[in-house]
Image (cartoon, rainbow, N blue to C red; front, side):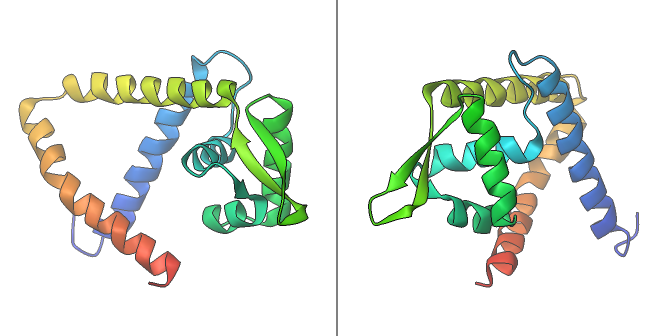
Length: 151
């Protein structure tokens, strides 16, 4: 692979891995299947309980009405709760429910087990290459985050 091909090849592989992991993990989860955006919103709310819909939309780079739809879906599934912001009664504050936190923990555990199983099946040389690439991938993720955030 040439240096010129690296960015598109890397983006393609990372997106493919994410898609395959999500599909495989979703297949074995009890209850209604969550789409990627639903899982991302649930994870964000778990990390930042009390976040508002507008802030969640900004964080996820989604339209406010799209996040409102996701909130409605996750609330109906019993995974999120929506409360009123005491400072602005028109705004909703989002919190994960106990079921939502359990679902997210289960999803993360299944994802970790799947990836661990597949990495363990790889050769030692490939495992070492993956381990050596992690710092550079983390720096890439940080640079992308900074560019997106404008910092």
